[in-house]
Length: 303
Image (tube, rainbow, N blue to C red; front, side, top):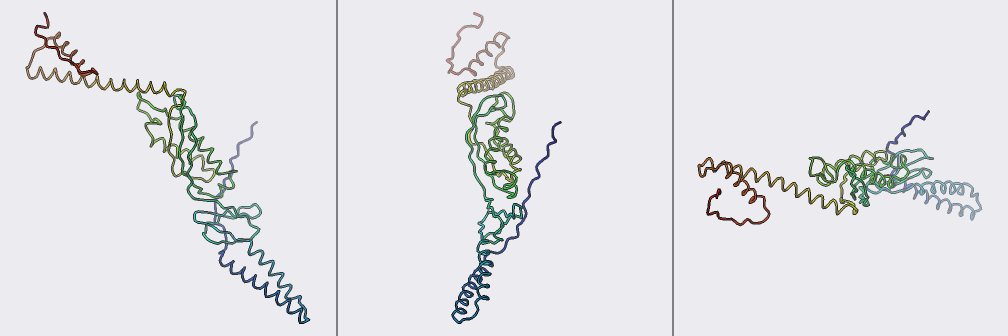
């Protein structure tokens, strides 16, 4: 009997209770001054032959407090957060800019919440029709939840890199590279749709790490080298067929219009044989790739 899959409980960011660093800096300076004063008092008491136990005890106490106070400072820059832990327990994230202070036995792990830009390596994937293609993308991402980024994944930056490649493979396999026959979404012809799908796919994959993707777009798209020549010839053939189809449809419409105009204006009366000959000549003129040289017929079509 297989064990039931238990989903991992996700962490959630909360505010940490840090202290104003400048206030604690003033306290540290005062403690340092008291140490100097107690030391001087101790020396003076010894020179006067008096007991120096009180000043010496005060100097020792101030020294301990001073060491504790000077060890708790840290700085937070704009768009940066400090994940605070106490003996392995998450106590919150401090996002207040400037000089900050917490108890020195509390851990401080700084995390950048600025926008990051990654240009992925070119990878080879198979599109919807199984054709090998080379693709690459550019992704703009940032950390939204620092607790998830630090505690829910081992290395969130490496996690982002791996998931970008996985998401690119997934989206690339959903659509064909190109299509001349059917009106469907393609990687080359529908960049807005493909980029939107890629962004949604990456946001879903990276939500476990507290990362949000602001922008994702394909930067390279081409057939793999082993089939590039064959696919180019196929594209050229399909393009020629599509162009010929439109040309023939247009030529038939023009011939039909010419015959109707000749009959409506009573310019010439054509029997079936002459009509067939005119249709043939007009189709040659309209569909031919070379210039047509007119031939003047001085006789009759039946002679």
